[in-house]
Length: 173
Image (cartoon, rainbow, N blue to C red; front, side, top):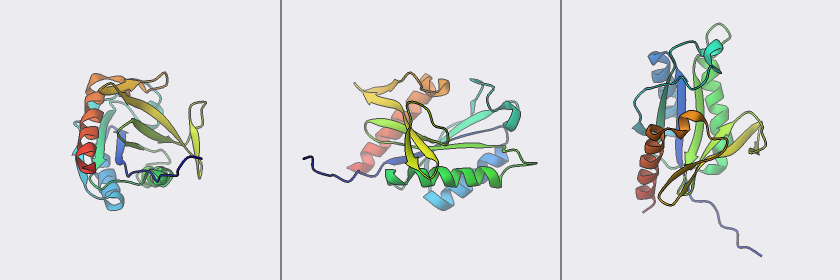
């Protein structure tokens, strides 16, 4: 019989997509209110990897990533996604969301994202939320998987995730 070991806390991250700087700032304020101070904020990257969000969010989309200073209980990922959905609804206009917020976490072995959509590689967490391992950390770097989103595959984003992982590793010591 295996010994049950409670998971170490992880590094909470959020990826946001919008074309409105004011929405990035408003969402950040609400995320900080819930999860504590941000210890990393990326530059705004052009988000043109898919047209999936265009009808709802508009044109000229940008992506930004945050990580949070306070370590996070990974068993609460479903609650983080539910909270991010509430922020999206709160910041919506005319019945359309204008910002997309994807919470997830980084630990020493992987990057995990939360989703409201089921798929073959996702595991149900509860409350209508699923989790997927989006990247694995192996041989000194993050490795992409068959289902890794296109922007999460870029060298710029992989460097961000590696830097966040290094900060997390320092926090564990």
